[in-house]
Amino acid sequence: MPLHEGKRSLDVVVFPGSFDPLTKGHSDLVHRALRYFDRVVVAVLSNSKKSTLFTPDERVDVIREVFADQNGRVEVQHFSGLLVEFAQRVGTRAILRGLRAISDYEYEAQMAIMNRHLSSEVETFFLTSRAEYSYISSSLVREVALLGGEITPFVPPAVEAAVHAKVKQIKRTKE
Ligand code: ADP
Image (cartoon, rainbow, N blue to C red; front, top):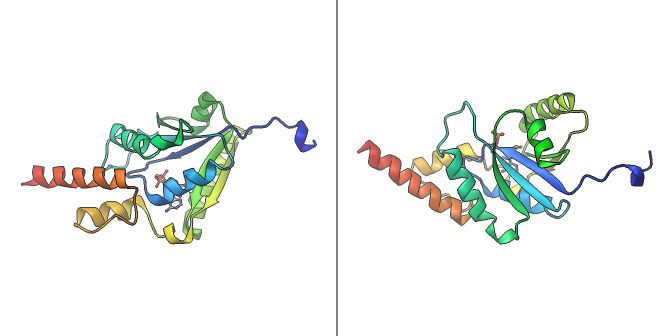
């Protein structure tokens, strides 16, 4: 089928993740996706079995703050259950994920193939990390922050403030 006959579906892309917390690697992906999609819906996984530093509400709030200057082109929502169903509710068939290194590939490919299996119309679009952000992960940011290290180069300012507040709160409850 010629391309122009296909139904265009580049309006919205869903970017799912834990974002505990959102890093500059994540925000760079969102900004780059906005060059190709009209809107990005950041979908914060809220039923993760992993223990997290931030509650889903805290993560949603801080990500909204990070993208407040994007004139509504970045929406932030909670998400639980099947991603393909969430994408359907949002009205898109496009999912965005990031690849930092070959080590990300196996898990990401498995998920993309499973999601296409669950809904044959859904496609996962991968953006490779910018070289300078390829070593950044939420888990490293959490570790460094909890040990009192500097996280300014790794996270947007709003996230840095939220992480500092959270670390202070944790230290206070331990005293
Ligand atoms: P999940 O728990 O679903 O992997 P994450 O918040 O860790 O959620 O990551 C969400 C997506 O962002 C994943 O596709 C991950 O590979 C990607 N990602 C994470 N860190 C970076 C980074 N520094 N650069 C580019 N992509 C990244």
